[in-house]
Length: 254
Image (cartoon, rainbow, N blue to C red; front, side, top):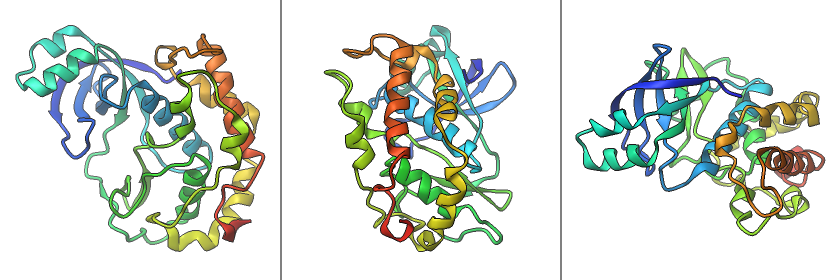
């Protein structure tokens, strides 16, 4: 599982997004962007963040280190902002921490000189059905003149349909992905090469290891998958089914 740290101080909210993440300090002396379990999107967004971040790492993309952050009642009790206090109170327990990259800045459309990972980002977003890396919201940072991918919660939409039980992985496997609004669409010509490279990096054993990073506490039971182990197996089936096809890749890469 991703390592667990304890939040020692809530520093400031980040009001750019609707989920109101915040900057926190933890007992490992690290500073993190905390994504709270009590935000409106729910725990499955945190699960998607871990899965896609771990996949990104395994195909060679840069993405900030993740930790699980334990939030206590004491941190929530002394927050003066009522909106933030309500969020913290609803988020007591295990939350997601994304390593804060000091001095980084948002991607402005200019890929850093020498950067070769743009097509890999496209591939990852197509594979995970990420609908949130557009010009309106690139969800990438530039740090030390390198591209970093962040904010993967809008991926893996299929798990939001599990309230009545696990759905059909083959439907996700065949689902096309629309690249028309993607911020890196100009790099689609390099997708075939990226696909050849990545195909040798992912298999069932890697998917199993990726799912092992997700804390049990975030894997909410659904009909037919009442335990964390069964839910992990379901995610592996869905991702494995999609990995076995290429219907989801933009035409240029097939």
